[in-house]
Amino acid sequence: MESASPLLSTQIETVAELRELYRAAEARAARLRLLSQAGGELALAEMTTVETVLQACAGRLAHFLGRGRASIAPQGPGLGLRAPGQSEGTAAAPFAFVIIDGFADLSDIPDSEDREAVRLVLELMGATASRIEREAERGRLTATLREREQRLEYVVGRLFTAQEDERRRLSHELHDGVAQTATALVRLLEGGTDRVKEPVAGPQRARLAQIARELVQEIRAIIGGLRPTLLDDLGLRAALRYLAESLETDGYTVTFDVPVGAMPLPSAVETALFRVAQEAVSNIRKHAGGPCPVTLSLRADADSGITLQIGDAGRGLSYSEPTGLGARQGMHVGREVMHERMLAIGGHLLWEASPDGVSVTAHLPQPL
Image (cartoon, rainbow, N blue to C red; front, side, top):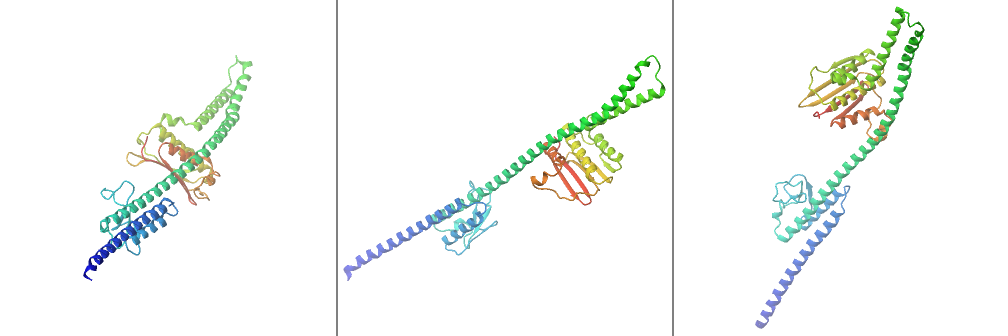
C-alpha cells in the first residue's frame, strides 16, 4: 500500500490539473461565446431594435458575471458605456451605465481575462449606440434637406408663376391707366394744333394740367408697387409708415410702433423686412375681412436682434399651420416667400393664425 501512494498522489495532481485546464477552457469558451454573440447582435442592430439589443447584451454580461439580471441607466454607478475613442482614463463621462449588482466598476471583476472580455463588450455596446445616434442624425438631416429641396422647388416654380402674374398685372395697369391717360392728353394736344396761335383757354389748360398730374400719379403708384423710393431715399421706417398709411386710407386702424432713429440696418435686411411687411399687409387686405385694428412694430437692438411684427384683429383663418409640402401647395406663395426671405438673411418667420386674427413675426438674431 505504501508503494501505491506516490502513484495515487500523482494521479490526484493530474486530475486537478486537468480540472483546472477544463475550467480554463470553459472560461475561454464562455468569453468567446459572449464576444461572438454580442458582436453579432450589435452589428445587426438598427434604430428600431437597438434598445432591445443593448438590453440583451447587458443581460448576457450579467449572466457571464454570475448575476441574474442587468439594466441600462443614464446614471451610475455601474459599468460605463462610452463612445468610441473614450477610455476610462479620459475626462468624458460615460453616456450610460450597465447596472449589475456587485459590479460598480470594471475593477470589481477579479479575473483579468474576464475583465478584458467585459470591457470589449462594453466598447462594442458604446460603439453601437454611437453608430445608431449618428445614423439617426444623418436621417434627420437628410429628411430636412429633402424637404427643403422640395420647398425650394415649389417656391421657385411659384415664383416664376408669380413673376408672370406680376408682369400681366403691370401690363394691364399700364394699358388701362397710364396708356389711356397719355392717349387722352395726346388727343387734347393734337386737337389744339389747328389753333396753335390762339391762346389756350383757362379751362382747357386746367384740364391738361389735371391729366398730366394724374399721369404722374399713376406712374408713381406703379413704381411704388415695384419698389417704393422711400425705402431707398428715407429708409425702412418711412417705407413701413407708407404701408401703414395705405392701410389707414382703406379704413384700417393702424397702431404704428417703429421708433425714430432706430439702429441702421444693411440694405439687404431692410429690403427683406419691407417685403415681409408688404406681403403681410397684402394678406391683411385679402383675408382680414375688411377694415380692422392692425399693429405694425419694429424693434432693433444690438443684443436681441431685429423683430418685425404685423398683426391684425380680423376674422382670422380657418386652417392651422401646415406642416407638409402637400398642405402648403394649396396656399398662396406669399407665405413661403416671406419665410425664404428671412432664411436668406439668417432669420426666421413665425406665422400664427387664430379666430381673432393673424400675427406675422420676422426675427433676425443679428444683422448682416
